[in-house]
Image 1 (cartoon, rainbow, N blue to C red):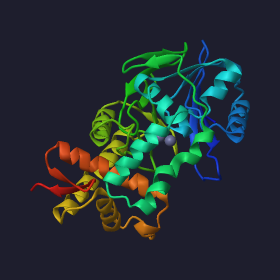
Image 2 (image 1 turned 45 degrees about the vertical axis):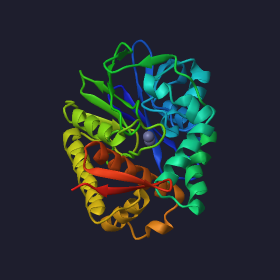
Image 3 (image 1 turned 90 degrees about the horizontal axis):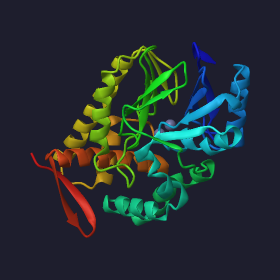
Image 4 (image 1 turned 180 degrees about the vertical axis):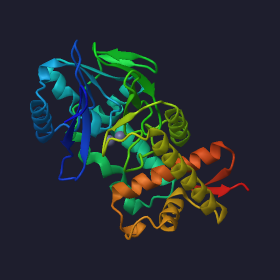
Length: 331
Ligand SMILES: [Zn+2]
Ligand SMILES: [Zn+2]
């Protein structure tokens, strides 16, 4: 579907019947087309891309550049196949490129690191295995491909019609980029800003030291981008970037306050904090205990990210007790 002149949105399916789509965007140019993000590596995803191109009278052979906003499977999985089909150059932020090997080629060390992090933060032995392996099913849906071109903040990608400015927005992933087209005021936000969901931000072996602080800083900078149209990696496109960013910032600040309140009520492991925050927020009808391992893990890693930010800011202290970390409010 052509969403604005020369910009086409194609929705690619998630695997395993998950009812979610990955939005990819093709920008037509007099010197070749740019594809932003790729979807998962699956035959269904490749077929949906082919179909979407055909419906808009586009073709694989004009794609010259694939820009990957970040290396999560739903944005990067299919990059290798697309390159095979049309010889496009794959490009991403240099920090993201460094994470490919440990995430998709040899992930033993990463999983071990994740396991120790979860254990230190109060996950019991019975739950540990499931939580560590909660995203292992995704691996077959990614073919690792090293980028041909590395990007940095401020770089420009030009196809004769569109000039995209690279905006480095760490937080959801440490090398996450957004792309801004200043002449038409178009903003391609990846998973950094979504219209109908909050981006995942968690502390884990590939997140950097203080991802929540990175994310909040990135959101603040995003509020100053003068965009008229926003094209996210999932969900609907929208125009009110400033308002949406303000909502997302409020959400983060509110959640951080709840984490702090829970810690003021007593000394806790991060796992206990996550559980309590979940209950206090009344987030769903399902109890924390009956959430699946992936959801529990996301909530826990996000809680650890808040606690880490509060610790660095000097509001939270910690003690080590038999290999498990307990946190407490300092005020
Ligand atoms: Zn993502
Ligand atoms: Zn995504």
